[in-house]
Length: 112
Image (tube, rainbow, N blue to C red; front, side):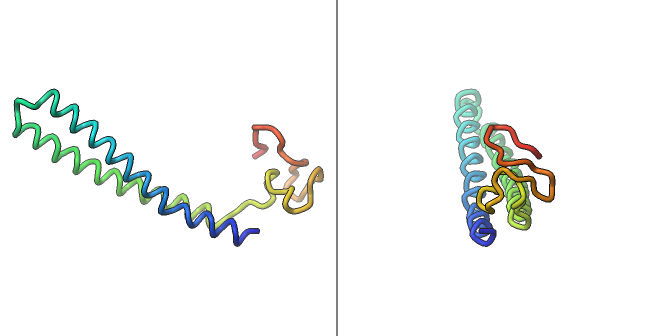
């Protein structure tokens, strides 16, 4: 079970990084549209604004990807199989395990 879950957690890395790129792209499109509407009569200023925004967005995406990769690595390194959501797979349904979890979490709240 753990090896299968770790495999799928690792596969989420590229999708999460792609999402960061897509968000950056959409933000840049919004800035581009807004800049064209408000500063269209000042092409040099518009070019500087777009250059500055592209630089800041690139730095932000790079930082976001670092955080995403760190998070995926942390999730990949430890899977809490004693969590109530996993006890069903372990055959410990409705029992108390070593960490004091009672039964399976059947609601929307978590017993962390």
